[in-house]
Amino acid sequence: MAFDPAAALAAIKARDAYRQRRIVEGPQDVDLVVEGRRVVNFCSNDYLGLANHPAVLETFRRGVDRWGAGSGASHLVCGHSAAHHALEQELAEFTGRPRALLFSTGYMANLGVISALAGRGDAVFQDRLNHASLLDGGLLSGARFQRYPHADARALEAALAESRAETRLVVTDGVFSMDGDLAPLPDIARVARSGGAWLMVDDAHGLGVLGEGGRGTLEHFGLGETDVPVLMGTLGKALGTFGAFVAGSEDLVEYLIQRARTYVYTTALPPAVAEATRASLLVVREEPERRERLHGNVRRFREGAESLGLKLGELVGPIQPLVIGANSDSLEASRRLGERGFLVSAIRPPTVPEGTARLRITLTASHTGEQIDGLLDALAGAVRREA
Ligand SMILES: *Cc1c(COP(=O)(O)O)cnc(C)c1O
Image 1: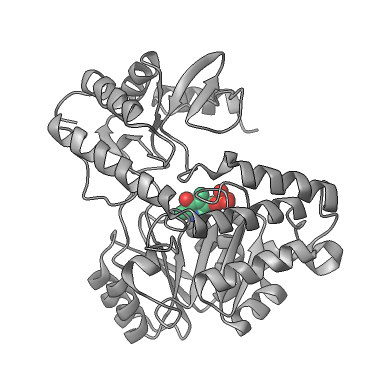
Image 2: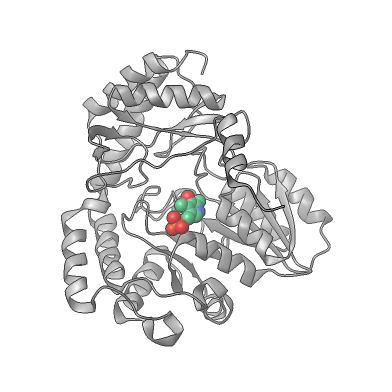
């Protein structure tokens, strides 16, 4: 029997799990025009407002004049430009590692790195709530694949002690993308090291945001390359552009250039995107006030939510989800917020576990106090108190 997409769609709809795209009609910003309506955007990952920063845009335009639109080939053929190379060096310097390697997306970086570092006969250990791209990388690797309970270093320690695999790789998000909490990295790093495993951290939501210098979750915890030999970051979130990178030792990067299939067999990013990202990285370094504004906004939101009796986790970053439970209730809350002019997406399974549908609220440096207070006011009406 052939696959029946209509029946599959009907089943998705019956679970209130059907997802639709909204058409955005202007640049990515806090004030967004969506399908003809102005809304205040509380679901973007553009945490520092760099997707629309004048210096980033200007550098992007000059990049197009200098490099044209596309890269023309993969990095190993003839697509690796001086713009890519300079960005790699600057990312290495920023993360305090000998080398960095650009990938075209974070999804591809994770697939490529995990499947290059582990294979049949090896073991990969992952936090249950890791990003889908990490889990997919683990499956693709063909290694024995074990998920440990969320943020549970002791469970990881026990799993490592039981493993007989010679090569072990532990993989975790730095900041969990749908929960907003931090991995207990000092404990995870210690356990990984004593369990003879390599540690890879995906810092998609920490980079640019956490730590004094915006160097991410590792800086927040004071960890370095010996604790976390494989560091992955994305460029499409706080850095406001597109792409991803992996940073680590000289040998790690050279090995990935040889063996990471999602690096070898894909077209390099447009060089102009690399140039724009160099400008973003400079802003991350030179405008720490953006990070301060972001953290001030997070504080204002949390204080307001607390006085409304809304239950948020103990979260320090820009992702402040409000768990609702049922898919239909989260959709209804998101719809009510939309009526009041606030864009907050309802995140449902399979992105999050069954029964934990949520409003994923994200704060950025660009929100005003008034917009945050407005959201809180709308939340008071849209969400039942026990949420
Ligand atoms: C967004 C994200 C990715 C994927 O990065 P893209 O560049 O968007 O493909 C990977 N890991 C985490 C934790 C993410 O949040």
